[in-house]
Image (cartoon, rainbow, N blue to C red):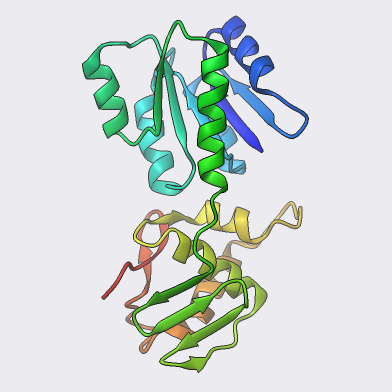
Length: 226
């Protein structure tokens, strides 16, 4: 598993990284919002640990951005802001946990393990939505009871969107999760083509999609229900 740790105190950051890193868990340490954003453009993490007060801004904005782009990735805020108001504000901004400084490394490890365990829970294999019945284990996809044949790419795209239904998933996140073969370059049009083909197979009118919606400026979203 991969953890991103955003902490501008270099000594503290190194200490936390040493405490959390294991043979099957890597921790990427960065010290500014700009550095974190650059890293997050290219990689999806299993957990984000964010200090709030940073030299180049407030990480609460980054928290909101990441929750909008990938709501299933848990975020822990790690900060010296220990007033009740600060804690409530952080949790209402979308944080999954809030740890105030100073803190015990043992407690931090326990809370990190808790969030990672939650993230390991797999969504239901069979999902019924409107006219659709998708069985992601059996790899069968039905609309109005009839089987629909999907390519491997279309299956991966559909599963990501359905798992995150009701939330917009950023184009960069979709590209990263669908094309995970280590290719350095993926044509920007590849995702657009995959979406177009999936709509053609699932939507009644692909030119006016009801289920697979475009969220302009962000990416795509599967509707919760119609």
